[in-house]
Amino acid sequence: MIYELRTYTFHPGQLPAYIEHVEKVGRPIRGDDYGKCWGYWTSEFGLLNQAWHLWSYESLDERTRMREALSKNERWTREYVPVVQPMLQRQEVRFLNPVVELKPPTSSNGIYELRIYRTQPGKAGQWAQLFKSILPVREKYAKNVCVWTGEAPQPNEVVHMWNYTDQNARLKIRSEVYRDPDWLAFMPKSGPLLQEMQSILLLPTPFSALR
Image 1 (cartoon, rainbow, N blue to C red):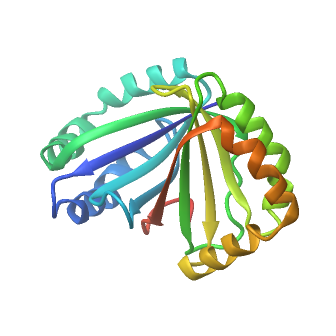
Image 2: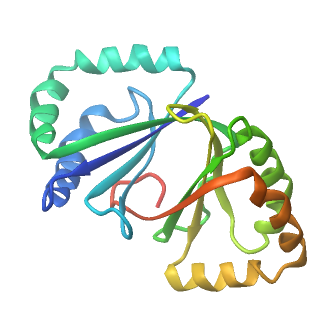
């Protein structure tokens, strides 16, 4: 299984029109016939005017086949692509390998936190396995959605996603985690393997599978 995390940045003021067009045109045309769509979000803090969407494929070869088939879908090329392209500033793609399989939250209408960690060269797998070992401790406070390591374009990344009922719950939970002795013991092992840490707060769109 390979996951594809796509980040689209739009010209100011264009994001609402894009989300509306995806809901009314893009998702009905594409469905899950050309890769499974797990979620669609917009960024709340940090860099704005962004949409993040997550897809999965059995393999990179399957993705290539499905993308080629999608490019031959006349409704897609006529009704979707020409409308969206002028709205875009740039597109970024991450290919991700699951370390912990994706688990949809049991409740809906919360917020999502996507954490992107850049590790020391060659240390992503080691950090991910270390993190996986402490995950039962971390999940006493909030359930993990998924943990991935980067395949491309950045092989030294670990990406993990979390779900919270709201921002206040997130702040409270993170405060509690940092008082847990097992988590505090994990931190000195984790820190030296990392170079950068990034957190993006994401709000699910009305049509996102992960709500």
